[in-house]
Image (tube, rainbow, N blue to C red):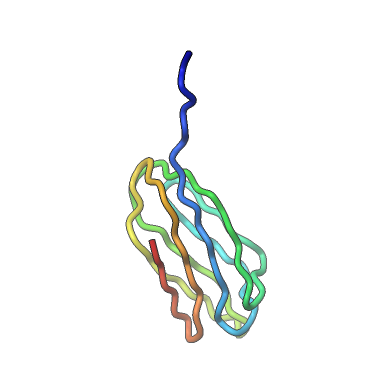
Length: 98
């Protein structure tokens, strides 16, 4: 009998604490990305990623004033497992917690 193979993944939570909705949210990670058209203020989105390669996680979004924000977070590694929280804050600040 063969044991089941578990795929490596990272559970990502993106939380909007900017005080206003954000539009065109995109989270890029090695060889893939995910996002949302709109993320309302005070809400979270959850996404499970499978890291295929090595490289940083990057976030970009458009604020209510049409200003685009970009931030680069920690390096991800091939087959990494765990969790990551990305918090969008006022004044175009972004924090990343692994």
